Length: 312
Image 1 (cartoon, helix red, strand yellow):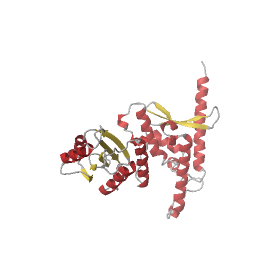
Image 2 (cartoon, helix red, strand yellow; image 1 turned 45 degrees about the vertical axis):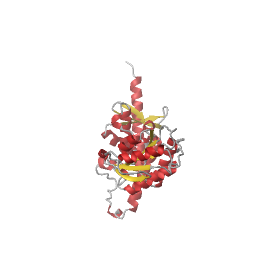
Image 3 (cartoon, one colour; image 1 turned 90 degrees about the vertical axis):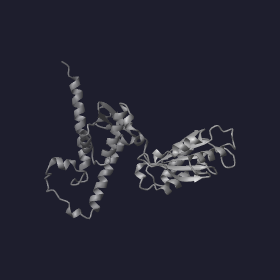
Image 4 (tube, one colour; image 1 turned 120 degrees about the vertical axis):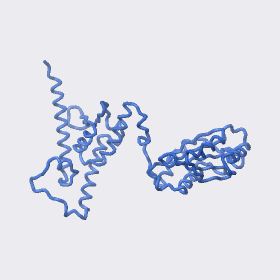
């Protein structure tokens, strides 16, 4: 859940926007207002705001946006309840409130109009409201087990320019591929199919891998620069977890006895064998595959260094 807070001076403007027919608006909560039509709602807000004329911006407008993944769970009642709890935690109580759901976008969202002049004439505090709002939004997201999109998932990639556009493209690809690969060789092969080259960074002249670099569309980024979860060590740990999960699924499968067993010394089709995630491999086979892959990469790197030293 993400909240956006705006203050203004025109209740008529905010009411007209929130109840715009083109947005397929639906009133969920209308508290302390004469709600015959848009004009009477705005007049009710304005009448109460005159109790404290020193406040030049008595209009409070908050939009609460939810992820489309939660759409099936967010009934009108649920959204109204979350919105009211958000207002209570923000200290926006004992005042006029209008909560309206819109259906003009693919993600569920509501708009809240409230009077910053409370029923007793006091001004509702806006001190540190954005900091408090961010904290409360996260707490409610966790409390109701709502989908939490990280910062990169909220980025509108079609608006990005290079090299950021490629960087976020790599983020999406890596997020998908790292979660389903069982070793570095398979990850490299899957990335290559999508136009991504992968190279390791080594410590000095040793064969100790220090990092990993991904290249696409002529732009190169170290894994940690794309996202912290894509550093070499974290990808390596994720691949290991994938292998362990795969083995556990096989061990606990009720159809374990039906799995085919390759004859001793026979590997059948090499491509099929190497692309599996340990289905027919002994426990150390994936680790050996990674070690062999690192050795191949190191040999290529050293070969390139020797070629650069040759002078004519």
